[in-house]
Image 1 (cartoon, rainbow, N blue to C red):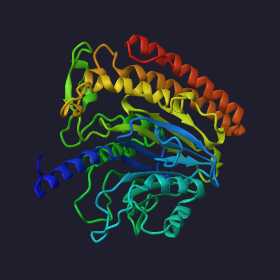
Image 2 (image 1 turned 30 degrees about the horizontal axis):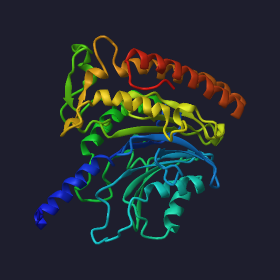
Image 3 (image 1 turned 90 degrees about the vertical axis):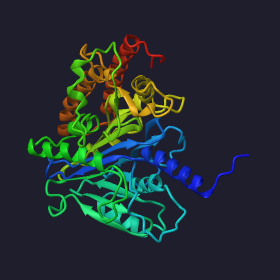
Length: 419
């Protein structure tokens, strides 16, 4: 029998902790409507997790109906990892690893998904969420940065631990001079240099700062420029600028550490809120369900009811078809499974000089979804949201995306059944 001394046990636990941290590390942001292109607030969660299978679920179990991002294994919907409700209130989180009180010995942990369900069930405003955090019994079982927006111009982060929280208001020019706040995996309210995601934070900061200068803060920027960014602030590498040098017929592996998207990225949600003079029914959740570099954004509205696009919900197996498609592509991007191979991406699978990379083929499909959505949404704004019209639109875009993805399944010879 092998005997482990205390030093060996500590090393094992530290390695295990660091491995798990990579899979619970998200990049998030909120933007005040005062600084966006159209005056509507924005919320971003680029999610990293060890639960690769994600889907969207429509809930009717609270004061407000809501749509939430859930792990596919969570068949009962006990936790939500971001979402929006019928009051136009939206919430997401990132784990924080430097905000727990040093003397705190609480064993209750990982309750973020539970608290976000309660928030979506009960809250209409940022103030409501503050009241919820105050009234919930302590310890909360969290160490997180909760980002929220509402239909009343509210946009704030709540840096939260088991016993207290600090509010960071995106409408306060003293803390958010350009109207946006970014959080990765540390809280600014703590002075400790613990936590993770410092490089990812700077990646996002560079992108947001440029977007403000160019008056480009909108939902497409969050979906396509932030969540899929291949820029690295520390090394200066931009993988999107080098692809033309490589043929898709040859592998080109590069280290893929501390980019915003990573091997551990499993989904992205972007919520486009509403202006104070608009009905909350217009709040839109865009979901990149699955590995963000290998999927297509789909829009949903709580006002559309529970008949969500079939690609983003349980197809009977518990999984989202769009997520399954993206994971089949992800395996080709990260084919090396032994050792630390998961840290290296074959970038020519995404982008290559034959214009046959996954991102190159999927982006035109997504752009068509966006074009159709904006065209229909302009009509809905003048005539109001209608469940039948939204359901018909879901069918239209679902069918279009399905047809295009089935072509790509054949083209790329994926080991994946048609939808």
